[in-house]
Length: 354
Image (cartoon, rainbow, N blue to C red):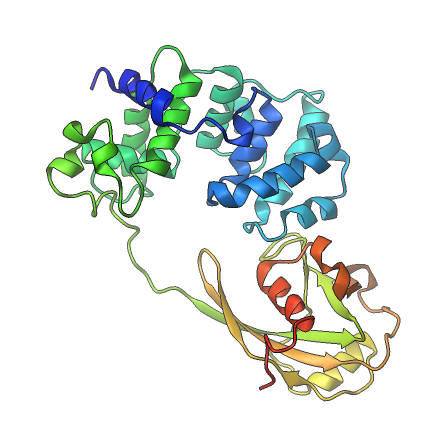
């Protein structure tokens, strides 16, 4: 399809998205931030986070010198928290290794933590006009349907074919508009479910449409059983404050404040709380369990309420522990399921005693 890029860019001028907050200017920092936030996250969810983040960290230098805890707090609720940790690490790397200047080439940008090949290409194309292809989820879907590419796009052979196809379609100029057009077509027309084929500029050329395979392309990820895990969490409450523990940098909720996890081997929760935190013996009360889905597993959370009559000094693991006043929870770096529990402490009736 020799005129693919020309037709796509012409469509974007009339029907594409032009008012997203990161589309104004070619500041690589703002483009980088938006691309990281948009990974596996919808535009409408990202916009308020993006605007708050920029207000607090307007440039790479301010992000690099900030405590990582402040970065995590602003990211709280957006999910996939490794993105925030990598963003902070990358900012520090830019200041240390690139004299505070954002790299101009996609190959160098891809060496930053949390930046893959496609994301690096998008940043280089938008900010510096480099002629490079992207292959995000939207582009994979468009190419699979338009050219009838079979197989799951996550498989190496299929992905390599899609990369070759994406590179063969690159225009010689106006690369930023072309990349944006690809994203817009996949996000607004060639959507995963209920695509608007009647409004697609390539309807007559589309293999999937012609062969009635739109619903089956691209091929889905091969199904496998989703693992389920369970864990108990101590909801230690003293007056209007809850005891939280900062998670290790690696693993789920890395670097965020969470409820202390009760070891699987613990039978006497009251004795465990007394031994670890110096609490007076109290009767633990199980709250309503609920589940939270991660990318690769489902976690069943069992919150256990422990009301403490006193607030003992935090001697064990003191650096990782802190009391959080319930009326200060909005600015805290809490993962979504922990925030749900903490919010419920201020709204009786959301949880019931088991």
